[in-house]
Structure formats: structure tokens, C-alpha cells
Image (spheres, helix red, strand yellow):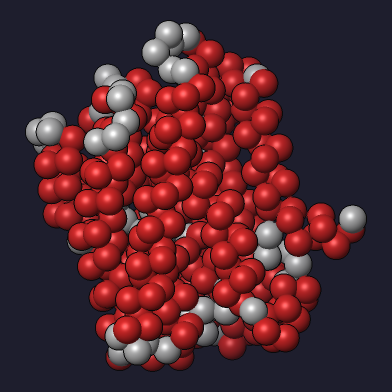
Length: 330
């Protein structure tokens, strides 16, 4: 039992958090309102970059082809998959929410965490995050406009500045810390603990979204049925898994090294909840239920990718890391 809790603590936390959000969303709304996604994401990225040895990141920058391939999948295949899956949903809010989700950049923290869990190249996953976020002002805006049939006016200057401050600056500071020997040794020595903190930060974003979802449902909607929730859940999970499988197997065709194959799989298919919520709150709040597929997609990707990461880790070395990294691996 103790081993099960150690290995599954994050899943248990996620399930417990969602259950709590379902039971008392209105009571929790003021508390989660204090959580600022930008600050949380910046903190998680800083911790990831601090724990990442600079030599690994520079090596990836010199051979970025796996990361470039993941970006192409993230911004070409994933929106198409989301559009196809969304066309099978009856509610316009669900279609728009799913389209927004698959059009945003790679998730800002968990892709690197889950890549590490699967013994992939976390530097490649981090580079995908940088590249997708750096180009999201164009790619995301284009896909959201085309896929939702809505003309979205975006202040590109403010959007680019905001993304730079949230994404690039924390990574730069983290790498500066890594360049200081004493701080680098501290990060390596406490990598497990810092990974736990990163995961808790990721959980807080999911929890905030879950509270908002259940608060809206509690507010009343005669159009939301169990069958519609099952349908949108299936659409979200299948879209994610299709992208992940294509990323992994196509990377084998390109003969990328296995750690890069794993990084491509997670980074191309995992999507950023904070950016999706930012777009929703800025331009799509009139579609009150669009937040539901956003939350489902992101909760689903964390749950299913946990088991996939453990499977990909494989072998004696993977089993050893899962045991030693109990606080990180869920």
C-alpha cells in the first residue's frame, strides 16, 4: 500500500482535488481566484531549468531537429485532429474549447516532467516549449480564428511580451542559477524535491480549472448531459493519444534517438492550460462551457501520460528510477 501511494501520489492528489472541486466549487472559488497561472507557470519553469544541466540544453540547441519536428506536429497535426474530433461534438462550446486547447503551445512544465519520468530528453521537451510559445502569437491565433470561425483580435505586442516574461525569463534565470556551482550542486542534490514542487504547481493550475468547471455546472445548464461529457472526454483523450503515438512512431522513422522520441511524443501532444485559459478569458467567455474540454484535456493528458511514461521508462534502469524517484513519478 505504501509503495502504491508513493508511486501514485500525484494521481491520488489529482483525483482528490477534482472530487473536492466537484463537492464545493462555490466555496473554493475565492481561494483559487488567488492563484495566478502566469506566476505558477513561471515558477515551475524556473525550477525545471534550474535542475537542467546547461550542457544538455546547449547540446539540444545544436541538434534541434527532434524539437522542430515536435513543433510541426503540435501546430499542424494537433489542430487538425482537434477540428475533426470537435466536428463530432454536438455543443458549439465544446467544439470551441477543444479547438482552443489543441491550438495553444506545448504545456509549460509537465511535458519536461513527464519526459524525465520516461527517461527521455527533457532538454528537447523544454526547447519545444520555447519554440511553440515563441511562435504562438501567429500559429495559435491563426488556428483559433480558422478552427472556431471567430475573428479574434489579439494585441500581438502585449501577447509576445507576456509570453516572453512568463516563459523565456524564468528559463534564463534557472540556467543562470545552474551556471553558479553552489546553486547547481544544490539543484542536483535536491532534484527530487524540486520536481515534487513543480508537480504541485502543475496541480494547482488543474485544480483552479476544475473549480471553475464545476462552478459553471453548478450554476446550471440544461444542455450538459452525461452523454455529452463522455463524448467530449473521449474526443479529448483520443486527440491527445493520437498525437502522442504519431509523435513517437514518426520520430522512430526519422531515426531520432530514443530519448528524443520520448520527448517528441509528450511535447507535441501535451498542451498548455494557462495559455488556453488566457485565450478563453480574453476572447471566448461568452461560450460559458468551453472551459470544460480545456480542463478535461489537461487532466486527461496528465493521467494517461503517467502510465505511458512508466511503460516507456521500461527495463531495469527505468524501474530503478521509478523506485528512487517516488516523489516525482506518479
